[in-house]
Structure formats: structure tokens, C-alpha cells
Image (cartoon, rainbow, N blue to C red; front, side):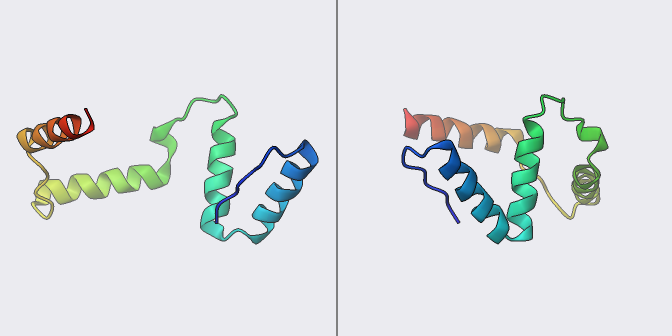
Length: 88
């Protein structure tokens, strides 16, 4: 669900955002809220983000157990250099 503004006045922006939020699903609401909170100029304390820590722990466990083989640095570097060459 995209929002396209065409030189709106503030009242139009307010109404369109209100309509969007009223009809947004839970994931979109969480995303909007996260983006708005990021504007609070408070530093993001990733170490207090339980979801992030859980995901990092899972990835670490998968790498240590061999479930995830990871990607060798040489391969990452080659992919990045290839992208640079394609994009000039």
C-alpha cells in the first residue's frame, strides 16, 4: 500500500496519513511506529532490542553448529566488486 502525495496541503497530508494508519495491517503499523520513533533523536540501543538479540543469537548458533555455512570473505568481496563494475 503506497502513499503518493501530489503537492498536498497539511490538512490533506494529515487526512491521508490518518486513512492509511486506520487501514494498515499490524506489520505496517509496527513499521510506521518504528520509523516515527527513530525520529525522536534518541540513539538506537540495539543491545536492548530483544528481537535483534534473539536473531543474532540464532544466527551465531547456526554458524557455530555448521547449520549455516556462512559466506567466505573472498566470495563477498567478489560479489561486491562485481556489483561495482556493473553499476559503474
